[in-house]
Image 1 (cartoon, rainbow, N blue to C red):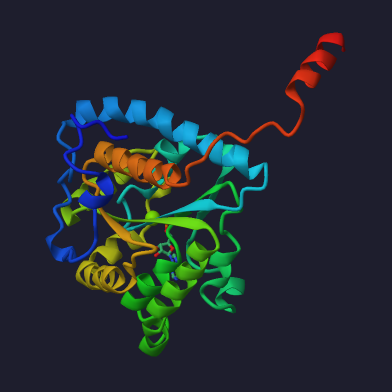
Image 2 (image 1 turned 135 degrees about the horizontal axis):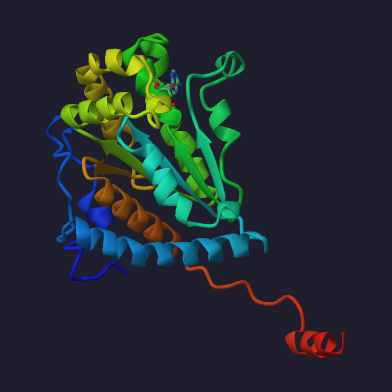
Length: 283
Ligand code: AMP
Ligand code: MG
């Protein structure tokens, strides 16, 4: 478990969404963590090994009929660091056991269906960690901010999402929802970097500038999302993301918690070990 010397309280408690005002989030804070960047990076290396071991157990059990899974939902404004979490946290575990899905503007075919249609297709199978880089929550965020469907339609989606997630949890998926927040200033810095570095142009979208004008509307939409879809079976974690090292460490800990809660043993041998040793020795 998390070292007492570094975490003042468990990360899931430190990041609780209940009662959080989005406009008051301190995006440069490192809730629950006592150390600095160096200490954080040191701890991350240790904890990554723990995460990797737990993920291998889940995958091994998946090969032996395990039906449970973990779903990490990453939701955040551009530059919040969703890609960094995928690359650095998820990138540290065996890709065989990961099902990654990024959700962009719906395709014409997706638009013809219910908003959860494309989401359902990407749910993790038993024994896997599913990762959503953006998610069904876009359908109450960008869609709400830009009036992409009438309010009567998006207004009903909060309850639909809660029902959908309730069923998922009942069917054995542990949902880890992370809402990632950077400040408007930090976002500007990160976008400017994308414009200054040829290896980052590909991440830049001309929309990113216009979207900044909708910041207050997005804050309102994120607030409604937290208020209406933070449930005891699928709680939101509010993650300050100005410090990338902290965001990565915190998500690593959340995943360790989720996987640890499954209490996974290594699957037992389905054969007679001694007999197989004898046969192998002679083979
Ligand atoms: P990125 O994650 O930077 O590749 O950008 C993906 C874009 O797709 C973002 O601007 C999202 O807001 C947008 N997007 C994702 N889901 C939806 C949706 N359901 N409806 C409209 N736009 C969406
Ligand atoms: Mg983008």
